[in-house]
Image 1 (tube, helix red, strand yellow):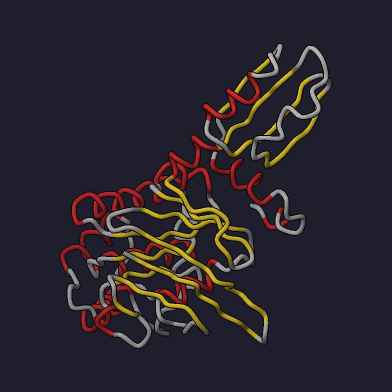
Image 2 (cartoon, helix red, strand yellow):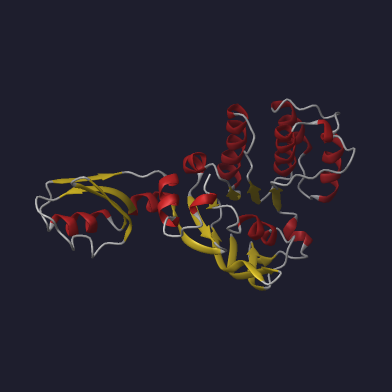
Length: 297
């Protein structure tokens, strides 16, 4: 389990993380989403022990991670800001990883390199950005991590390669109960693979839920009444409201049964509840913060 509790991190007096809490259960794929500047990369660097929180605690497998080599040896990491040793080939980077990670799997490294069709003898600096990202993923997965932390892992990859990446992740979660924390702007893809979702804004957790529960508790509702009803929605948690002619469109975060019961009191002429995608939920959850929406991708 990855546990982040009340973590605060400041840069030049400005809070990048403001009492952030995250819980990633063992054997799950946790998707962390947020607008640009929400604090996603900052918390990942704290989880990896690259940065140290100003306050709060971070534990991976029940242990603190900062300056703890044994704990770090259990974590595979793919950063959005890729770095390889200057002049190194993929084979040489593999040899380096093999010397510092206790569970390094050379056979997997060779198989994955072949599967992704990368030349082990070419310098990594000569690879395209997409190929470098594949190389970083191969290196991370070949350490046989108990925990995998990914920052924009599929950005810039073509659809076939993305499927390969997710297949390796899903197989390791199923076979070894690997625990995955992934940050990405690709919400449609996250929706297809993640068990849990955390939406963060301005360094704080907005909502953290099982994905299916989250989707079942946020609804797009279209309603039309025979006569105007000023207080029809006052007992509901309305995230968004707009009027389209005689039809009200509302986004509600409440149980389906409650929505049906509250609106049903007023005998609507039209009453439809429609499913929302993760992308729509993300937009409406942050829609009340005017400066957040501009960062949505």
